[in-house]
Length: 310
Length: 289
Image 1 (cartoon, chains in turn blue, yellow):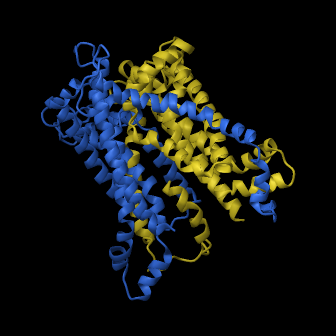
Image 2 (cartoon, chains in turn green, blue):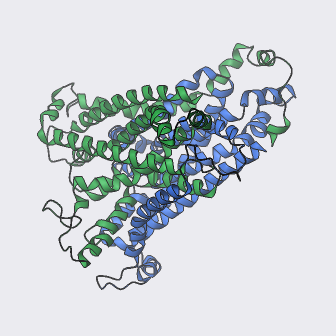
Image 3 (cartoon, chains in turn brown, blue):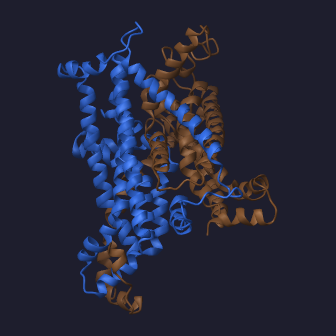
């Protein structure tokens, strides 16, 4: 309401502003306004992050050591990293493809209509709010007593993939079983992150394509996909990172280790293994290294993708 | 980040009359293709939610259905069986309040100050606010454990102190809506105009900047609430009883009640975010008019 009535002043902007910050004392006072947030971020973001990583470099008595890195020669730890990476890669790839198809279906719908609002809110709920509750949802669906499992039993599949996978019990409580609940938050995250890029496709490009005699097929292969490629791979990386760092779903389903976050839990909660108390820090460092590589690739792709969005 | 940049331009390209049918050469799919994809997606995503509802209506192993478990919440609830769950919800609400306060008192003023006075710091602020996405919560937890032994020394081991840690997790989600709102409303021009007309800084803040930022602030608060209610990792490692950790606890003794609360929480969050979406849509249509 204010926006429509207030008109920008005719006086040059720097003239009015020059009067504001003229005295050095004033400037010092406004600088102080940044202090509370700065202190908060240092205390609760910088300090914990540094402590988490640094703890890997010290032994139980507080002396500097690199011995904790011996954890990376432990086949179980390596297996955990491998499992984390393949689950993240698989769910990211599947989530990206299915999510992109949903974005395609939503193309041309108006963002302020009920359908889009509903899809957007459902996506946000499932992508950010999930965790423990998603685990419950899938226990009720494909757990040992789940609806789908019981239905498969009732139509004759007494030993189906859901209640006996790989000869070791219900699929849901094993590492490969994580793929299904993970997809349930990966696809919505893809919709959230990829939709803006999809909406960035200008209708003039489709018109130009049609004027030059192109079909819808040539439009997508020659224009749409090449333009969307950087954004698509950027979202793919984000999905990978999301699955890689996800903890709550796996923790609610699996009581042992198997992926890196669960291995960190084992390290933090076990007090029986002597001498490896700081292995959690080393594992955290490993995760951060993976995330830094991912985020560097992500920002490079974002820069490329933004070229088309001016 | 990308969303913020795309939205304003979208509003500008939209004025095509809505009644007109999309021509066939356009990128958008046909009505049938869209319906097929969306219906299949909808069904697949509804199955687990409906399964939860079915599960919560089951009566033991008999195969019969009824509202026994719902009734039990009230009868057994008064007997104190689910105290841990209600305590967890109360703690989560306290953490919500602290976290929303952090967003409103620490993040928001800093963002406005940077926008108005130090635009050069905008990049740094954005970088700081995005970092928590790139550090997995489980990694931060390793560092939060020693930090919280100090915090517990100052404030005691109170559940609400978790708000400090969760506030960090929430930063990226709270930053984005406020930042896109700030970018859309020309805060500098507005505050200069107000100053030129003789307003003091407090007046500028209270009567010009904040009213213009209302949609962004509201959605930042709602998303913050959703994230706090869904937070599990930090609470479980710092041994505090919150909604999510209580759900996991109750699930071992009474899975039905845990599922009932999970369904309600999912629906609650969905409605909360739907409200944000509608608020945003209202804001857009008003600014276009």
